Length: 301
Image (cartoon, rainbow, N blue to C red; front, top):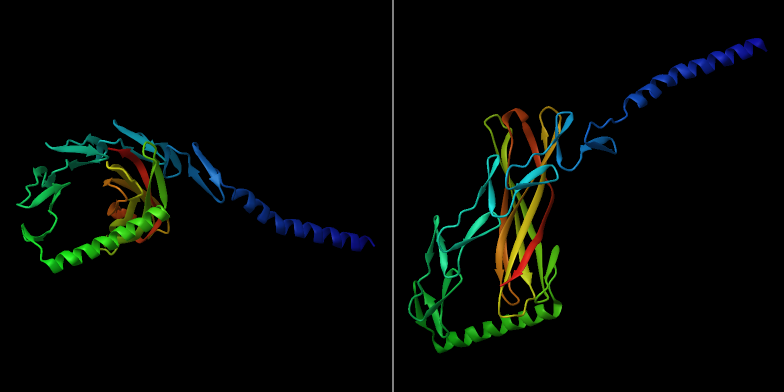
């Protein structure tokens, strides 16, 4: 009996010795977050307003005329990033500033760094940055030519089809990935992402040097007035990348564009976001993570 008890004691002691390394390993694998960070799952992440630098979280310091969002800083509206600073956007004559860019006034078009007045030929009128032929005239080169009777009939049929499309659109309303309402008119404006593409270039050693993410979108409204809506669309994208060292990383960028939408109007554009990698990172794989476009502001003019 004593021999049996002694044998059981040895077996129990042996089991304890075998399980002890696993318990110690489990304790040592507990995730410890540094200052200004939090633990989520099996990783730690920096708090908002901080970014990871090695094993620490450093506070993001925004330069003058900028603000902090997430783990990055962005220039205020009317300013654009130049290196580590935000420079004021200076519009040339006959232009205005919107977001981080300048745009020519109505009746002017951009030519290099200037805005030139749009000159309409005979039997034409100017609208926005272009000229259009008067009714019953068609554009032929840089002039407007009188249309034939058959051409007028074909034009009338096309206009009827467009009016029917507008009628259906009014009945259905507008929808998209993100929508906002202009409260003075009650108009609804929506933006929807149509396509996202990734284009990367490599260094001589075969690792990625830079990548461009292009986000194509449509923006539309059910506005019914005689004025127009000034709509600012902002798009953002995240990329994920892997290094030759076995570590992974991510980055994000955003940009905005301005649109003028008239009654039941729509427009489309493509925003390009650029990312670059240092040669010592040896990035060999890149893919697009999350992306979105949203209505940043809507103003009635």
